[in-house]
Length: 239
Image (cartoon, rainbow, N blue to C red; front, side, top):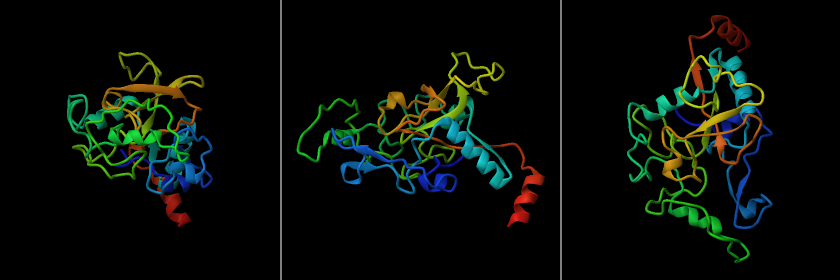
């Protein structure tokens, strides 16, 4: 599994035209550089990519590397997130200070009400104001401590697409959920900078249509199986 979420810089190798855009300040809704917080820094996680686009990226990366690269299944993602722990989060419980481990909705979320016209919209975003993780929107990949298996930002920063359809539990590897159909909603995991700890638990799940681009959803990749010698030979020849 990728140690980090895929960044804007990495995704731009696949799609140079992609733009993760900005988070609007207050009631301004124009996505102008001087009116929002940037989400498109090179080391910030790429967002506003659909699950279909994420899968296309992994297909492109497979061809480039000679490895089978894809999105994790929901079960793979949770196993990696837990990193051998059995509680709500790999760093502790829902009352633990997450500020060194996760970029979540914290004290800094209050800044979302800031408006460059000296007007203030309602402060309605839920947060855990006991802690301050130092970031309002997405942080650069790897700024927070990893879990016990060396994986960063499994809780918070950006939600992450899986390749699993949002079917009810109990989970089964053989009921077709890991090969979503055209109209299935697909599971995202991990929470984001906009979510409190309870929505970033190791077991918490949401879903979106596979075509939807979401302001706080990105991706992380996995490599499965052994390399394809033929593909590696082809890539070596191209070099």
